[in-house]
Image (cartoon, rainbow, N blue to C red; front, side, top):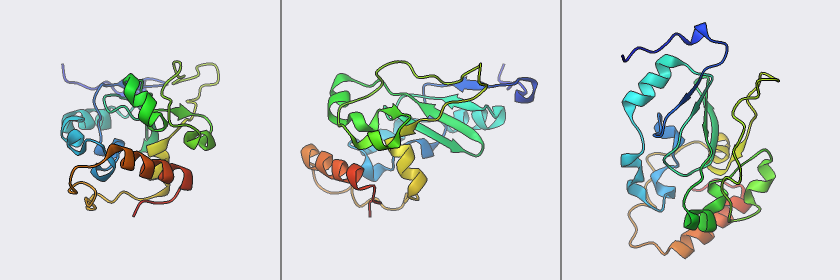
Length: 174
């Protein structure tokens, strides 16, 4: 019916969607193998609905990036399974781990088993680390920086090498 229930009537509210409710839940275009991905991954209407609902946690998908971030009091979580080739070539960006140091450990990865979203016995949401959500915790977004987007055809092996170096260094991309 289009009405959002009053989240205050519930102890814990967890909402779900396939698409992204916020553009902040996607790496900037300059980092994407497919820069046009940003045009087809989210919905302003969905974002407004999640904002009105005010869940404790919103679980989303579609973009194949492991993500755990809190924005405006809502926890956003994506446990990406992805395609086999993505798991092989950029598993580090799919994986969620409880140890931030292990994010850079291997290239292959992705979800190996279901993750726990809410522990009812402890009444808590376990925290995870995802490569891009951790990156944006440390470094501000630069949406006006699109210099990577408009170069000629990109050699994916070179891009992967740069991304691996980024992962290992922990430095901001400038």
